Image (cartoon, rainbow, N blue to C red; front, side):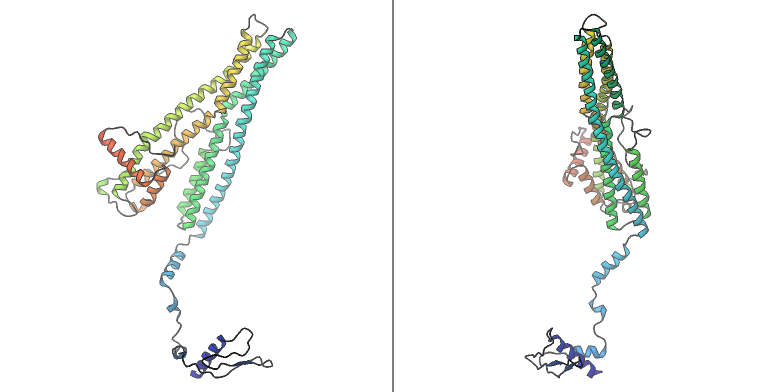
Length: 436
């Protein structure tokens, strides 16, 4: 066995010195000759002497069979990471379910984008057609007043009446549907579905998945479908509600009763007493300032939209009545009513639909919903007794700061300012959000 080991070692060393063409080679310290027989295709190794190269340890390990153990070449840190990766591999069934939800979300994003573009085109085309019809009716009413023959007067005023009645019907339909508001709804839906898809994608990349997350994702998809419906008939959002409420596109969260701070230990998972107090102060600012401000703006936009929505059809109807009396009554008032009413109706339509007042109302309502969501998210985390069940405090603070357009230092300063203003009975003029 020893002879076989020595021969193997010598053959291994001599083979390292062979060139690729297998020509004879020589070494400086010892003589190393190798010949290749073309007939037998076998190598013949001639004994060599290497004085300075020590191979006894290698030969001994080969002889005893105790060398080159696999455990000597393993890295315990790498093994730990490998084992942790294997253990953290998600359940393939749960991952498949989440991928199915993501496919449905991707399809909805595309649908809402297409429908949003379509309804934005509706707003432009209908507004252009409505103003063209209204101005055409006013022009015909003026021409009817200047006509001399009864046939011309009758033809022009009848045409003006028909155009005004058509404009009235179109204006009623447009004001009922509010195409600019419909387009804004679809844009918001596409953005929120895309946001949900990114959140699911990050969960899949982390690998911490369970069946509860699948159910939660489906509930959020269905809540978005309910908040921003695609069809117009039956499930369309009321464009002129009696009371203005923030938009809600998330499923109702479970109510968690506020715990007693004296009996609760806040430590670990990135949470501390100071961070919890800071989050409570942020919620107070959101309720008093941002949420109320955007609800107030929504109410103002809704009032303006109601006035314009009633004024447009009313003016075109008055213009139709004025055109009907052109040539039948003495005086210029029928023609004046027909022309002036048509001009004012065009102005009102341009302000309402060209200015997209319905879109402005929907934007303010969604902003109020955005602040409402931040408020509920903070409260649902802060009111949990077990800090280990909460989202990591440091990560959560960064999320809130970025959603409000602030740095961590500015967020702390805002909470401190709100606390000092509450104690000193001074009104805080600063809003929580710097984005809107």
